[in-house]
Length: 446
Ligand code: GAP
Image (cartoon, rainbow, N blue to C red; front, side, top):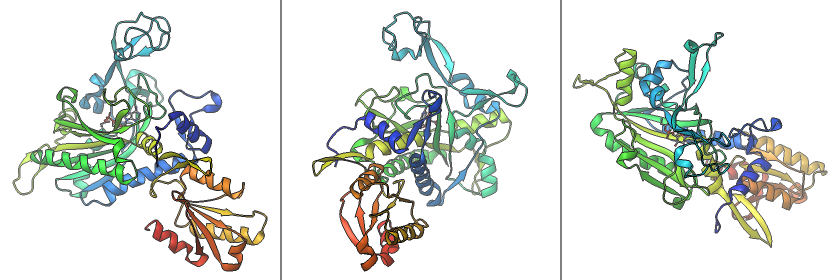
């Protein structure tokens, strides 16, 4: 188990070396703070999103899903307040021209040491693009800075089509864009990122109860998927930190190996993974006002009409992935050599089973190994590797978090058994070929 602090450089090097995360447009010199998920990263990301969806939609009676458009009517952002106030203050260093938030500079430019800056001015964080063939202001739309608004504007559609009664929620996963002044810390803060957001509609007086429930459920989700408890905490916002429409907000924070702006001041690397907010009835009221459509909810029993309160658990897929990666990273010494292991949970491990033929030129072994892969890959993400000696193949799989390695050797052809090696304990067990599928299903509790 971990007895060292994780070195981010090692994690980022592993991500590149093994195909989790690459720099965007790398062959052209890269685009700052934009990242591509490679074969293993894409699997990991998909597992995170699937686990989230399963937990907040599939396994609940009170939730439905949505997949709204990134591009929305510009008035949406007037109503939400983003056009006027989704801004950061910025200053430019007069010497190197780099742009910072005033709270980041102290007296000197962090880039060049310069001491003269322009006066602070506001900078809207929404990314703009002209829509259609004519490039003028009237055709300008925004790339959404949060997925939430797609949910609010579909509140009546979902209510009418699903006949839901309060309390119920709508979940959505999708890309969001923010022209962050200072992106950085690998994938922690980027200008294009993915969010997993829930808008949970409640009777106003029940909002505090569901607010508390969602904090606990979302906290537990990270723990259940493998994050160590000591690296996760809840941080209630102070009153003066709250957005003007929020009655309460609590962040779920992870203790990253780096410290970030936007994280809390104390505790070094504690930074936000997800925020759970009580947004009151602000959003539906605003969209009613700006659209002219009545978004009130009518209570069946009392006939009372009112705007529901909204509890919003809002997390980032990329940030969650980074936390799961960092938390899974482990090093240990085995027989005098360093073993790097990503101790992903069974649910998140990008590859569940590796099939390793001990001799790649032995037809019997190869045929059996390929047949096993063909059978197993219907139930598990599998990989086949015969490009090195067995010790090296095991280390390669450890390094990407593969849960089980199945080795086919000469003996397998005679006794119809293979060796199954478990990643964390490195324990090996002989398992009959015709029981292998069930054996693994039991292990993965499928
Ligand atoms: N609808 C509420 C909302 O968007 P937020 O705190 O601004 O709230 C929610 O964002 C989550 O989205 C954050 O907790 C974080 O995980 C993720 N996120 C926000 N900005 C991000 C960025 N620039 N890069 C990566 N993830 C980001």
